[in-house]
Image: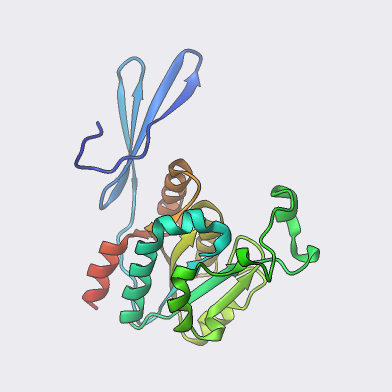
Length: 240
């Protein structure tokens, strides 16, 4: 079971039937996500979800930095170093970098988010809507048309992102930022169904807790995205 040589998610206890509980551990290796289930009767069940291995092609990839804004700073700052590393690796490989800003300009664009979050939304023109100061040096290097403003979870919905990507021949997207299970995951899924090859960062995405983060990684690895981290990107991009 868990040891000091591996990184494990915090165990979670689930009731699967009366008086019977299963404790779940998640571990991601280079090829699989392993699910270790320990029942109270001592039986250990091991399942695995394959994670397909591939690295982005710098000739037709783009990096999408999702919603690294003041409103989400408590999460964004936990992955700041990994996000900056990913941005630097992509710029060195001549991969274009796009930043998204989630904001609402009027009640007409609140949609279901207004109901779901009790109107506690990121409003345009407020400090909350701005990119965190630690990324300002990167914003300076970004062209105006590489800033994408959005008003829902997907960076593609009601934006010109796909048009911009098509214009420069992008076939693959790398997703980093916040929140793993909301805007990052929805953007990744949307990219996949639009025909893009998707790479999803495991160490440069973050959300409110580890359980939601791990759940997204499992879902995306199963049907939507190649999982990558900074080390894999560094090795992969250096060989192309």
